Image 1: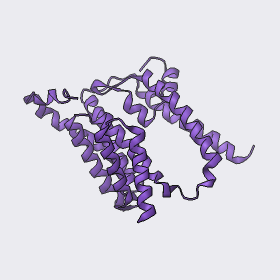
Image 2 (image 1 turned 90 degrees about the vertical axis):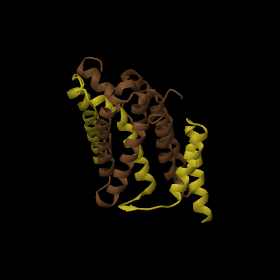
Image 3 (image 1 turned 30 degrees about the vertical axis):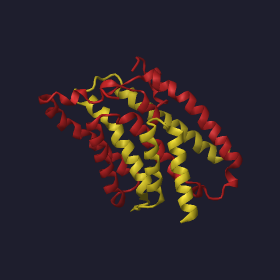
Image 4 (image 1 turned 180 degrees about the vertical axis):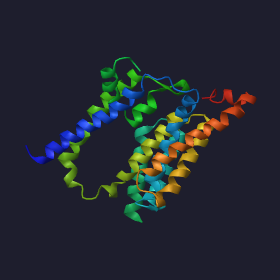
Length: 103
Length: 145
């Protein structure tokens, strides 16, 4: 079996163990009283950070380019239809594609 | 979480970003069975997407020309505006803080660190709660959804 398959299998096993270990070790504990409130607002912070990094990040540089217009277009769609997932994604992609093609 | 370490460990495998967001329940709790359920359609579509990519991927010379890098931010934005923030002003403040931390860290840290540090913003909510105890008005936010 070629080496690459052993690498794939090794990584797969490792990933399963890492993913499982969190609940394995901590799943039976009751959380401290302050934790639920923090956990409740955590995804918002992480999602915003994901968006910011992907829209402005360019390696170690912060850049303002077509991606900003694209995400603003997607935001526009979402203010009109709050859960329009596919439509907002397509709007962002098409906006960026058009800007790249004509600018 | 259900009892039994093996069962818990297997269920943990179903954790994904969007699955985590939509299996949240009130009060910072989660529905683990809902989480497992979110994986089924995701897995099927992910495999289909990979097959499509293998078949026609090589014919697309420059994916960026189609704005593919804008798809994921828009996806996360939908999760954020459609689900996470709703009418929760405190959560919106935390989210904005998380975004600021991330953008400030991009130039001075390796990739991944801006995301990890943005989670610190969530702790800001602990300072806010004490203020809420004195005024009842924030409790009705979200009622107009």
